[in-house]
Amino acid sequence: MNFLRLISTFIKVNLQMSLAYRSEAVIEVLLDLTWLAWELLSLQIIFSNTVSLGGWGKGELIALLGVLMLVNTFLAMFIWPNTEKFNASIRDGSFDYVLLQPVNSMFLVTFSRITVWRIFDLLVSATLIIVGININGDVIAPLNIFIFILLAISGSLVIYSLWIVLIAFTFWFTKFDNNITILQALTDTGRYPATVYPWWLRVIVTFVIPIALATTIPVQALRGDLSTSQIFIFFGISFISLIIASQVWRVGVKRYSGASS
Amino acid sequence: MPSNSIVVENLSKTYQVPEREAGFSAAVQSFFKRKYKDIKAVHQVGFNIAQGEVVGFLGPNGAGKTTTLKMLSGLLHPTGGNATVLGFTPWQLKPEYLRAMTLVMGQRNRLAWDIPAADSFLLNQAIYRIPDDEYKQTFKELDDLLELAPLMKKPVRNLSLGERMKCEIAAGLLHRPKVLFLDEPTIGLDITGQVRIREFLREYNKRTGATILLTSHYMADVTALCERIIIIHQGSLKYDGGINDLSRKIAPFKLIGVRLADADSHDLSGYGTEVQNEEDADKRYIQVRAEDVTRVTSRMLADLPIHDITIADPPIEDVIEQAFNQ
Image (cartoon, rainbow over all chains, first blue to last red; front, side):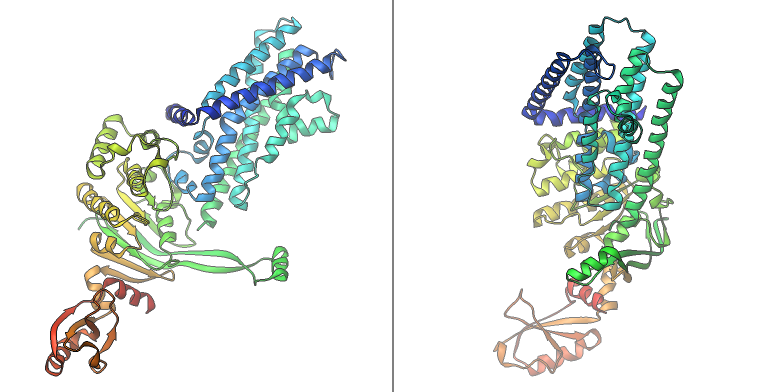
């Protein structure tokens, strides 16, 4: 319960911070909308030449775009700003204060910055998903929607775990400011359904670099393409990756306190 | 006799630092095969601090002060020895421990830069789970001593260094810690600022009975606040005791200052070692062993055309420097 209370305080404080930089927020929203328009336009061009891409129709790809935007929103709300703060805190030593607070340090590093106004993007991506689904005119079972939401969350947790591992590397290499460039490059591969890619790339995108887990796979669940065992495997993956990440974090923090001066 | 808040036994910290010669070929070599050198930052340091005591922790740069403070606050694991603070082993970082102590580092920021300190304080309230009424009361007490209220609404980046330091210290005290580790809390502040922080710490210690261990480069901080000092040099303990006993033990000397009729014409080397003193240019000072003071003074009074004579302890800075060099 305390965690929830903390998050709500974090949101309050962060809202204050973004109000200090209003114009920045407005520009970011405009940029996001431009990005979206561009993506929709390229989909339009693709589907003026073909009716399906790797077995996916236009509506489904719009829904996928919505999910991709959802993931990007999640990244922009928590991951990017907190990475920036984390790297700065390692550089100037204020990470010491993070460790000395009576709250789990991984939690603090995850939530201390929240770009609250990104909620706007959240609404846009939800709209895209709903519109995409409706273009197809299929009726989607409520169960599939439920599974979709769960898979989207568990997929995001996998990306989150990857992020934790990447920033925890800073404890070993101290100077690792570009720790998330990899993650940034990866999120782009989620733009098209994983089935468009050759099998080997699909394996990489799904399992080695788990972006597809948060994008393609939830949409597949919406289409009812996934078997029950597959769904449970994906839940398992996200659970295991979260455990691995928190262990890497724990060891990293210990390493930090062993080596810093 | 109050119980000990801080117990330190044989505490040691050895760092492994990569080491190489200067130059390109050495750089290439060290890329493939790194050599490490052991640096003993802290070596078998031991002391006890009673509850409510204010102790000054002194030493030149690189002496191991910050390393010791970091071990005691829990940020660093020692490589040897042991320490308990309030019965906790610090580096286990138990939440109960973290809620009972605070570390304030003058050179590091705890407060978020872009928002008013009041909002950062609210964050701390949530993190330390301070009930509303308790928070209000603590804040009122801190406001009493530090006059925080006018600073609370400005973004931290718009505060002066002194104002920010007041807020930093207050932020570290909102959860009413029983043990305070202060690393250079007055660094960079002007004299007025230093005095304010000093007075605050003295009053805070009196009101709450908190134990304070503080390092400072400003001797005045230490002489004003601490009856007891611990001196550490090159990682080892050099002195632990009363600040007033220090000169007697480390440097049993007195300074005799004389104003002479024709100041520069007399040779004082027969009485003791002459020392420079910039503050009082028309006086000349000699340093003599404490037990010789009476004898030397009467000889000087008999031999020299003296207008004025003073006998004093050497400045604490000099004594401590002497302790470092022993």
